[in-house]
Length: 566
Ligand code: ATP
Ligand code: MG
Image 1: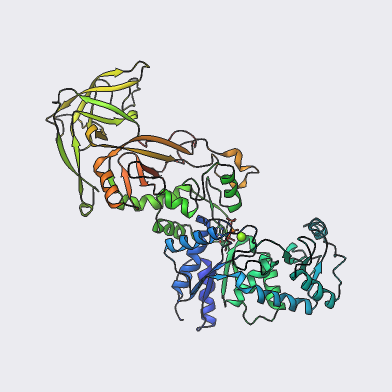
Image 2: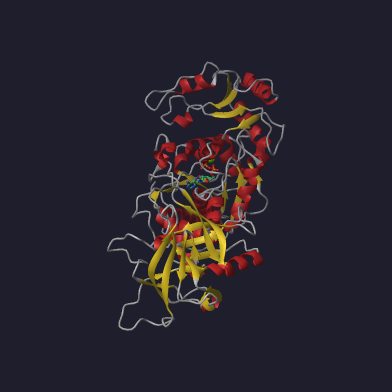
């Protein structure tokens, strides 16, 4: 291929140079998830990078499950990972690959290292291995089993494979250098014994290759040219290359590292997300409060918004914390174009228009989008009893309060100007009814010689359909929970606030009729919402707040109420 593709990210520069050296290079990447959890936004960064590069350079990208630890893996995770990659809109090349497909080949490569005197069966305990390894400041010590003969190692490794050792009793280690300044080169473990049944190979194996051994060899077997991984594998590259150099592989992939994505107010480690689930802090992997792809999808994020985000953050070698507002900006920008505008009242309070007849009923046709007539219209009903947001009326207020108050006027969106005159309270002193006068000559007209009053949203009692609203705030009340010793100390107690209110009947009918699984709405003045496909039933609609109308996390303290946004 002879294309010079321009992009300022360093990986493109590397690939362009590779193509300059070899115009016929067949470009090949892979995405290698470990099926021990669901994918998150950090994985999306890696997916976008690997698959987009393959598209741009007319190469291929494999999906390979890095399934070398049956104790933590599970078919449920495999299925969710496949689903999420498809959902993002990417297609892997050919069949799905599994590292476990190569177990026999990997075993043979290990035998080859033994034959070359480059691997030995060690029988130190796990703790002893750790102790003998030394530290960054002190060199390691050789294991007393390090100088076993090739014949001895050959037999013992075979014994390991046959299940004649128990777990932890023996392992295979590379014979490199216990004094190396790189810890990974101090005789790393290559194989260990695990008696757990494997989801792909069942009971066939009881020895499993370690990540470092399986990864480079799987890359080589698949003909991967550019093996892209995150920065923490920088040192492991030495081992990656050592293994390739000392086995009879025919193909030498090259590893390149980029920085991991870290996102404000979020945890992006599968192990820690699992702790949140196990401790019942969140419900499941698809809880909208965590940035797993299934959680983001449920919250109302679209594939295009996630891809835009990955494009915006770029690919570098600097570790940094990405602002949450950047992710939110990407979905807000899209929903601003695509979401249907409608009114919803999350915390209803009744308004009674006393000068209207009991049977007064008008229908207004309102646009589904103010700037896009192609999105159509829908009907709303106006009668003498309606609901407004509790926060849009105040009995006691300060000067700054610009909404409904006794003696003041307000315009009902798409409708008339009203003036609050009296309130009615229940026995507990709660306001239950605001009695108002309706100015019937103000429909679509500015009041003469006066400023237009503020506008609020409303729903006529006759037009209501009950709904549950789930308002999400960040799960953590600090920006970088991942760096805390105990991230569980920093949970935001207001990460989920539930409200029971109303949506417009016509919208509910549309959802029920179409069985709409992808319904995105802007509830006017409140925020962008989507239907929760999991908990919604025909007669009980649940809406998740995707994002506020404006960026607020940098302005307000997390943990303070952030319900309506005006
Ligand atoms: P976690 O820490 O979430 O458990 P992991 O690195 O163990 O992640 P894998 O399933 O091994 O998860 O990751 C598959 C691929 O996704 C790897 O190439 C890994 O480098 C990449 N990846 C994982 N997390 C991130 C992240 N936060 N940013 C960018 N890439 C990531
Ligand atoms: Mg991993």
